[in-house]
Image (cartoon, rainbow, N blue to C red; front, side):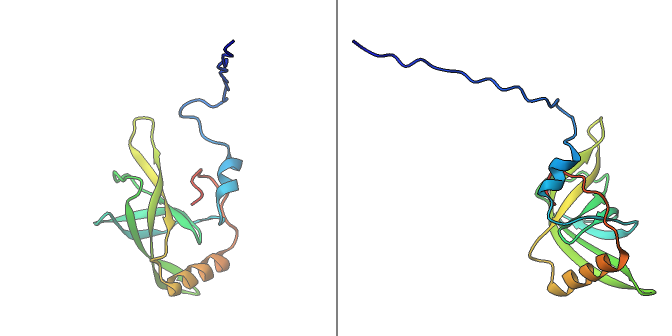
Length: 147
């Protein structure tokens, strides 16, 4: 007598619709650093193309770049900006990778999340840490990437 194994299917419904934003808690759980909202602009080099872009927020782990430039996930980014420091500015150079992209309903790029990497010098990391400490309360976490 032969025994037959009966296949079992498991169906799970996930209550998320395509295009729906993840809850703030899910992105916040993965993020290592709080963000500080900023009104700064920076010179950016994204995959070798230079432009001037606005920053939306900044942390020790990354930044939000307000851009309409057609960028791609994985693009290399260098951001050079002047950080306000006790009545003057200090130039800071940060490097990283685009890890997520914001798009409008029609598909246009409206911003991108950049995660910093090992190429940022320790001096620039210290300058950024001092700036973030000096200027206070971080912005709420908002992206699902953890950057």
